[in-house]
Image (cartoon, rainbow, N blue to C red; front, side):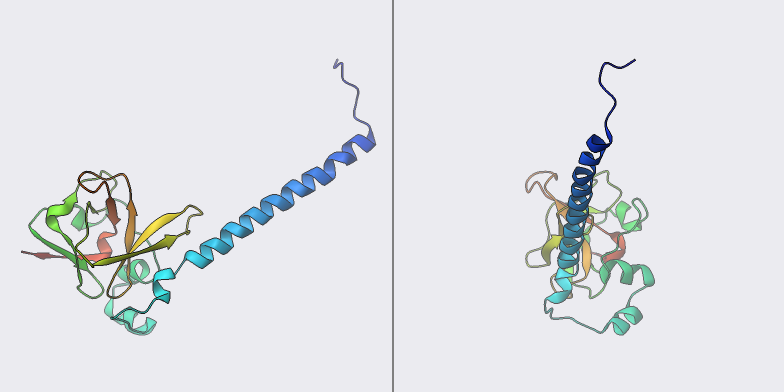
Length: 176
């Protein structure tokens, strides 16, 4: 038997406002995350890019997977891109507009399942804040068309310490 007295009805009622406040606080926090995610999503599309088409034209130019990734900020399953195993000399370009993005000399195996690079070509990419998963990440997009390529992280190799983790479907390889 417990030494503490049984709660009185008034005592139980005293906990209800606290629980209600906690629930309302959680709802408020989740709403704030949703709003921030909506504000950050599509940041690249809001900017003017030299290459632009209507959504219908992008759908004609790209495969369904490329459209989902490049125009709708999707991602591919890890380990599915043939470019993951591309080791020839050449250039990785944007699959939407052919803009050169990464030199093959900067590609490395990050063991993540996506083609990874430690440096982009000068002026090739842009970045924006991505709140899509409720966590702040840095989205990488093509500087010419705004197409979503992937994300950049600060856990890459020297000399930059960057890991440009790219969707292979957003890239095309041009051998040297």
